[in-house]
Every structure is written in C-alpha cells, then in structure tokens.
Amino acid sequence: MGVVGMSYGSLAMAYGFPLWVPFVLSIFVLAGASEFMFIGIVASGGNPLAAAAAGLLVNARHVPFGVTVRDLVGTRAASFFGCHIMNDESVVFGLSQKTPEQRKAAYWLCGLGVALFWPIGTLIGAGVGKLLPAPETIGLDAVFPAILLALVIPAFKNRTTLIRGCSGAALSLAAVPFVAAGLPVLLSLLGLLARKK
Image 1 (spheres, rainbow, N blue to C red):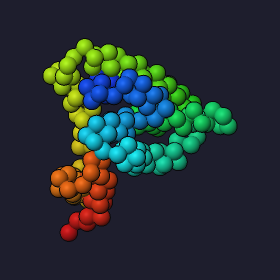
Image 2: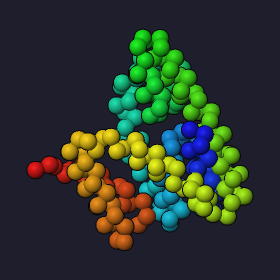
Image 3: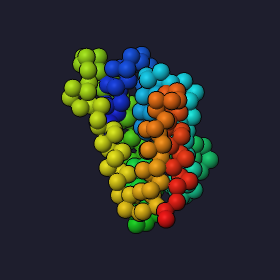
Image 4: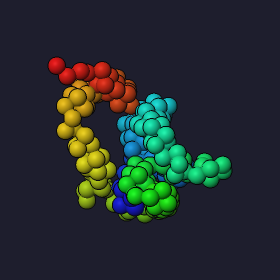
C-alpha cells in the first residue's frame, strides 16, 4: 500500500495539487481508486463534484462489503472506525481466515496497516513528485492502473462480466471527445446493461 500511496502522492504533485489535497484525501477518504480518480478527473479539467460522484460510484462496492464484514468491524463507537478502514485488502484478508477471532484480527490489522501506510506513502510520493519533474519517467504513473488491472483480470473469466466490462470501457472511450472530463467514467456504468447473447 505504501508503494501505491507513493504513486498517488507523486502524481498529485505532478498534476499541480497542493500537498494538503492528496494527504487529506488519503486520511479521510482512504480509498485509493476513488482518490486516483478524483485527482485525475480534476487535473484533466473536470468538475470536482463530478470527480467526487465518480469516486462514490467506485466505492459503492463497500455497501456489500459492509454487509459481509459486519461482524468484523466492531460495535458501538469502534464500528465507525472499523467501517472507515474497510477496504479491498482488509475485507479479503479478514474473510480468508478460519476462525472468527482470526478473521477479526486480520481485518483490523490489515485495515490499520492501510490506514497508516497509505498516508505515509502519499507524503513520501509527494516528496518524490516534487523532486522529479515527470514521475511518469520512472513509471510511478503506471503503478495503480497496473494493480487495478491485475485485480480485475480474474473477473473477466466470467463471460457476462467480460462483455459488460468491455462495453463500459468502449462507451467511456467513445464519450471522451464529447463530454466533460469525469463523465466518461460515469457513462461506463451503462455497460452494466449489456447482456450476453
């Protein structure tokens, strides 16, 4: 997570954001895909509200996550923080353990690790981003998309998912010349309507 956070911090600096923007997002949003999307959309001239809406749509996956890990997030006041540290990694590590105690421990350890190392990585990356005039020269701009691609590829074994994903990507790419920055991502959701024949 720290390495991906470094990528995020350096890209935010390269896009011209002040340090506080990626740092505050890394603490309070704590959702890499949404944060990358937000800075990318705003940096390309998109409306910050459209960027935030796109981020919320990406994070809609946390709704079923929350139902799945409701026994792991804690109770009362602790549940608020337990929900905040819910991310892909903490859910996967938590649910993959054998006993309820191990599941809860893995969920919290992973979630706390991400909550700590994501902002630290963001700060380090921001420092690197200030030193390098173009972080893409060492490939930092490709780290997060590569990780997302690695996470998504296994889902494409399902034909319906493949058709819907490709349809959404095609719609998004086709919309780029015609709509404001940030909207192609939202339009890609129409790919969910595609059906296999």
